[in-house]
Length: 488
Ligand code: BLG
Image 1 (cartoon, rainbow, N blue to C red):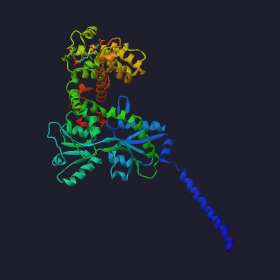
Image 2: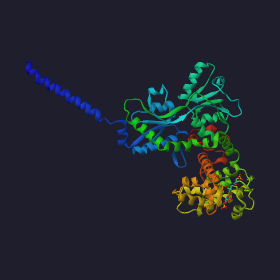
Image 3: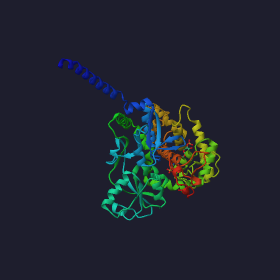
Image 4: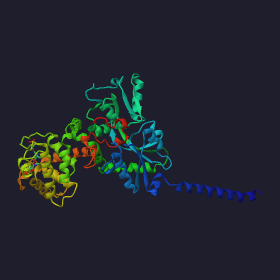
């Protein structure tokens, strides 16, 4: 009897083993998240609609998070599909749902409670939470100064968690969490005096400072933290691993730094004071001259925001300035350039703007054909400041150094040499204040960037003069009753 059981047992064992193997192979065949993304050809990402993350502008989708995650999708060789969450709770709830977003790229900071529903990537941006107050009000300097004030933060944010901890120690502290607003709304509420304070991350302050001239940083609340991307909780590490590899790569190859400079760098360049001043002038001075910039730009077929950026660099949009060297007016024309452009009165803003735009278009046109955009625009700006002759000298110095005379990055290294005898003595046109055009171009690029965020391109209606400063990503969500409120 025993002998007759053995074959059965063997058979049963065999069945068990095959079943087990089949099960195993079933496991192996179940595609990982990463494999599924590649098979589908789509990376579904959830984010927030705000200037620091994702918004639509004249050229389509943009924003720091968008640009970073777009590069990741390109690296994977898949299409990017962006979804926006109504608020942070909604974002975490949707992450990892079947056929839902697999990745959250939304300026998120990891926290104990968030780690229960998500896993976080390597860091890509360091930010500091900052208490924001309104200029002209007493500046709070420590947490106990927040007691008795009206404070609003984003619902579900780590800032709300921070305030909850603070409240445990300062029971008098009161704050509201709102899920109907974005960070720009919070800053606007402080700017307009609707609330006393808010708590937001330093990168958002840097990015939005130019829209809200009254907004000031009171103090940093707590330590700097890292922003990270998030994937759903679970054990499948395939996507997270790929993300970490990507983030490490963009950090090493400089892509990450370039993005940071573009989105958050203007406060570094202008300084906070420069950013407030620019915000103020944007509202108080530009509206008077905007129609001239638009008309002159239309006539010369250039971007009016670039002309306005030149005007800001030259005179901070003031019509009757004169430099030490006798150059005058809003666009700082020399006497001979003014004559050549048919400008009779350099102190007349309209004439100055038309003369400046005409001169810019002319010198840009005269540049060597081998200089391509966008460098062509930067070269034309440099020539506006230093003249085409000296610019040509700098291009020749670049050739001597084995650099590319058609690349602004190379030629701007040579320009400062024009003020050193060792170098200018070898050039055709000799001495020039070569450092000036380098700053001139850098500043104008920064002003131009900001102007392209806050205004519309030519012919598309809304601009500063209408009081319709365009805050990326939020105009659509602004409550209807506020639509006719006065200019920012
Ligand atoms: C520019 C002229 C160029 C001229 C160069 O000087 O002025 N640009 C305009 O008038 C728009 O035409 O080139 S040249 O004609 O080929 O010689 C060189 O002479 C003006 C510059 C000079 C600069 N701002 C526009 O950028 C200036 O005023 N620098 C001095 C500043 S301060 O006095 O030290 O404060």
